Each structure stands twice: as C-alpha cells, then as structure tokens.
Length: 235
Image (cartoon, rainbow, N blue to C red; front, side, top):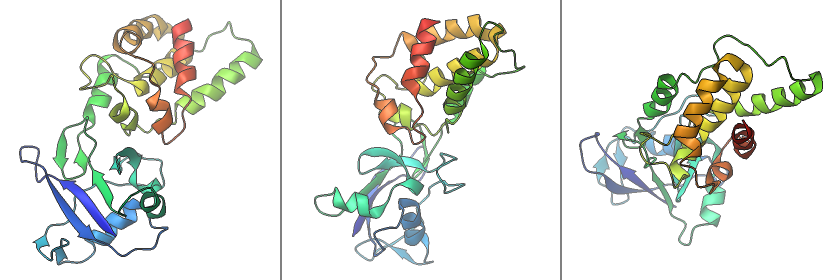
C-alpha cells in the first residue's frame, strides 16, 4: 500500500506531501504503521529517495492518552485505534493519507501544539478544587449525576472534537465541546464555583455552538457531550 503523509520540518517551514510504500498486515494500527516506516536507519520514500524519520507523538498506545491524534483519510482519529484494514477498505486506490490536526499550530510533521486547550481551562478556572457537592440532590439522583460525571471525566484533551467542530478556529473565544464537558463536571462537583462557571460556559461555548454534534461522533471515549450540554443549558 502507499502511505501519503503531510510533513513539516518546523513551525516556520512550508508543509509538503511525502509518499511511502508499506507492506504490513491488515490488522496493523496506524501507530504501528508509523513505527514500521520509521524502523530502518535508511528511510526512503516511494521513489527510493533518502528522507528523515516521521515525527509523531504517542504515550500509552491504548487509546487513553490522546497523544496520537491526527487526521487519517480525512477523519480526525487516534492512530493507535485506527487500523489499516478499515482504511484500505474505504479507500478507492488503497492509499492511506495522514496529516496533522489542522486546528493547532504544527511543531514538526504530525506533532502539534495543543496547549491552548489547557490555557483556556486555566484562565477560566475550570478545575474542581475542593469537592463541594450539592446537598439538595437525593441519593438516587446523586448516583445518576456521578455516573455522568465519570463519563465526562474520561476526556483525553486530544483535540479531535475541536478539529471536527465547524465553530472552533483558534480557541480565542469559542472553546469547544471539551470545555462544555469540563464546565458541567466542575460545576457539579463544586457548587461554590457554579455561578462563575455558568458565565464562562455562556461566553465561551453556549453563545458559539451551532449544535452540529460532530464532536459527539468523533469522540474516541464516546463521551455523552450532548447530555453535558443539556444539563449546563438547564442551569
């Protein structure tokens, strides 16, 4: 098969496409495919021209860290949870196309700078702090809230929801679905911060979301973001 990768040496250089030949089993993940391409000391492209190792990020390789987020065959995905057999089956000519997330600054090849995600959470104070739950909830209702809080807390901060969101551009005003989830979770776990969080939620999410729900479809953790939004909208 052919693997076409959008590469970029540094944040200040031009991007360019480079194509490689690969012979791997169908059950190979894209993460393993990138390892395969980087394996030899003498790396060459499809024409036999010498080139450099492909830059990309990973940590757990088990779908729980979000480091290997990239755009694969046009779909924002985690490389460790995307498999060759599915990509080839959906490709007209069997070519796998990989590029970095486009909503974040490129550092090198498939490595991007997602620090804006955490900076926005810090500047709006969206962190739990001391656990101060509502005393008004009945035990049964509190249990249901805990179940949803647990689901919302699975967010990897991988940026896939922001990549696919038609309303998110640079994180300057609209912070995206992951922000909505965190607003719900923190306001539910610390009632003293609830009024402050409602203000930030309204300003940085509710006023800019067009409800395309593409964030729900692409989330690797299947977080019920729509439920988080509904709960915050009621608040």
